[in-house]
Length: 403
Image (cartoon, rainbow, N blue to C red; front, top):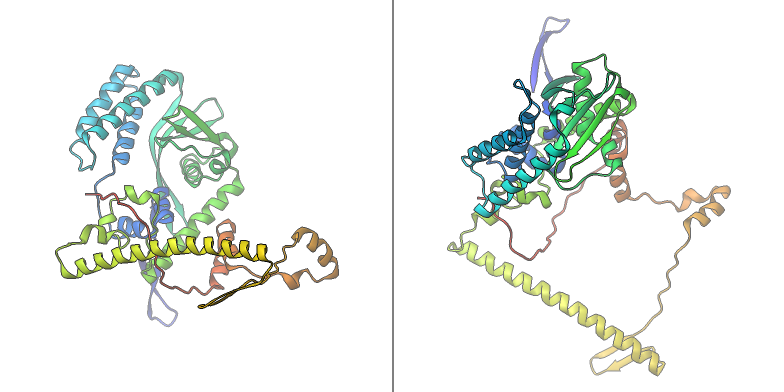
């Protein structure tokens, strides 16, 4: 947040508050993944040890930068491997939670990856313009920053942005065409060299574990949409900051998050002390709750089996009601109708009656929201009333703790 002081026509001093954010794709992606992690990382500035995946990625990126840096000649494969080995020894000073077996596996994975990459990408075969290019791009009152792994110039008219990925999962071409990171990097390159034409900038993700590169391009329309999307995210963050509302979003990535010990979703896993009376009591209640849920599940299965037996017997005896000393059980017929909506619409629309059977579905609106233009999203959000309630969900099993 920043502010400036101006004079009003009446001579009074007014303070104008302007929301200023210096952000990056990485920070915005963290926000989209988990708003609370974003708060811990970007607002509260709470530092946590790096994950083993982050350490591995950093060392690999460093080795690839070394590989393409002439000093004065390109390094041979042995030199790249030695560089990787030296950096790997240095990382042991990092407070990373991994076993000796895991370290050995990651180290061997790194060696294999670099050897395959070098064999397929001898550095002297590429016209590398720059490595780890930093950029800053103004966006209204904000600054968008980033680091581009590599910029090549494959021919006289074309520039190629290359971002290395150590992940196994490769996105579809459609997902790459909409990839926010690459769009932001494109904008960063244009900021640095404004004379470049959009159609002559190639955007590539290189998946190191597969030795595969996938590429895309951007046009002016998509770049303008990127700016609107980024501004929409920034406005959303600003609103959450004003309301002190950064909810946790549990998911698969939680296992690699260093904030688990202070996150309200996971905090109890780290804080519980079975010697405390309250903790001992809640553990007993949790156990009882699981047992009741399991009994309820088994009861539901048994009830279904009994109902099937009732229906079979009623059909066999041609009766609609069964009696016992405890009461009776009746069978009734429930009729449900399912229409082919396309055919129904073809009939009703010419009559002007189609709109009468349409019903707004809040879930469909929520699902549609991310695909709408930012201004449309804002209008729909302004027309919504959010209600919150508390529910309990149950999951069995042990959970990975981060030291």
